[in-house]
Image 1 (cartoon, rainbow over the protein chains, first blue to last red):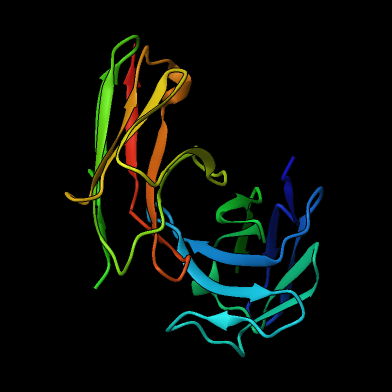
Image 2 (cartoon, rainbow over the protein chains, first blue to last red):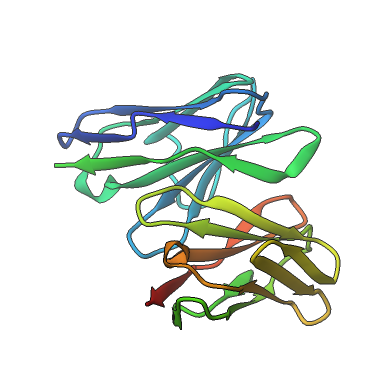
Length: 116
Length: 109
């Protein structure tokens, strides 16, 4: 159990356009979802934490107007990269955790975003 | 500030044993995780330590010393498929994961 999916797995978009990435918990209810970004040969960087039905909490340095996060249900969270630029090209990974196991995060397979 | 240190890269031979160390300084402690990440993929959970001591799970073992802010991941009977990055992460007092930069493990035949 505890499977998380992401869609799309990879996307190429033009500079200035917006891209939406979906994160779904397939067999559990994810009370909390996390969005990470990972640049090549670097570790994961937490972008934001969201609880179902409430606004996301963004990490310092992450623009909330540029990276829109919606956690509308216990099984779905979305990350929209607005007005994407080449420097936004990265590997975006989401994870979810359950109420009774706040210490364990289940990761999605990641989405590779390339902005041209 | 919060800090996780682990070696950038290690090389080992197939069939051998390798130990990957991790030291940490964080605001509070709610457990230490080890994850395996193959290139281009998301991390997969390997182990969780919250009490001092050794946790063994098949070929992989993880050790924790909270007083020393130290952990290690021990991999035995190395296989080529073990070539990956190994990420050490500590959960702080806010249940937030603080990640190390990862150790790239290269296995040679």
